[in-house]
Image (spheres, rainbow, N blue to C red):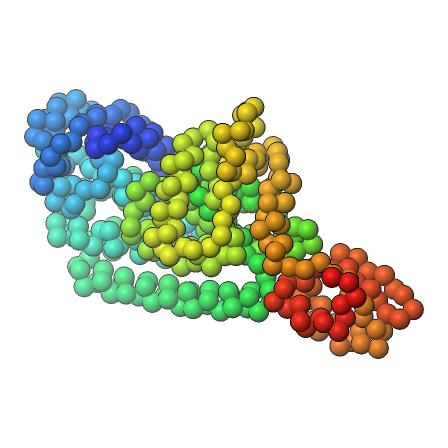
Length: 402
């Protein structure tokens, strides 16, 4: 098992949370965490980020310890990565972005997901090709080596650029198909709810609780990468529930852009459920999620959902959240009611009376109602249903009560 030693820069009060995430990311990558050096950063060294004294201290600490990868828990330029590696006797050095990209490469299962990850990796590695094979050969196996493959990464810039262009075109084709799917959903009046939020907050568990989808549930960062969509019914209304990739602090720009097409389900939804973890820093999780979404142009209504509340006795401080436990099913009905309340102003409950002579004509409209019950009378069929207000005029002649 690959061992990883962390260099944690202290830039602000958030460094502890970032360090905890780094340890979780290392474990998610299938590696072993073996220690940390903290360093307060006042002035960034453009060549090595850290000062020469601190690098010498780290070199001495790791002296004689083979096969230890050094993770700088932040972003490094190509030259900084090479210079730090040289200062540490040629030891493999990766940054936070490389680690996250590696996890994504190991988790992508769909064709689209694999394209997105490869594109993000190539865009990130492209400027690091200036070191030719020397720098890249240091990657060896382990973290940072999954994905496109060593032979592609050691080809010249022109070949890499051609590959990037090809992958971008394939993603554009996917986006066009996705746009057509969205239009078909709108035409069929299918309302979409997106599960979004920080990674490992229990979105997939909630997806399974609401729909029985059977999505992988795992206590690991980025356990779910490829989106899953399932139908569900609340109060007689049909919804398409979509589970999306989780967010993280300082999520690499390359990944956000590469996964933009996947995140379209969140950007175009009728309602977003922003899921946070009651056992973690839920305020930070919500802020990070909103900053990421707003950076992509998100402007849809949303509900704040606080998951993993099973051990919290006093929920008063969380009044702006819908508090649930997806694992144990606590307050799931309350969440469903909150979802229904968001949509109910768009709908009218009414009773339709359809003459038997017009049943055939009415059948072409039936898909636009949520039917609750029906009764067969002398003059026709009475149907208790819910109709979206924008489509109510189509049923004007059938409305008996509204």
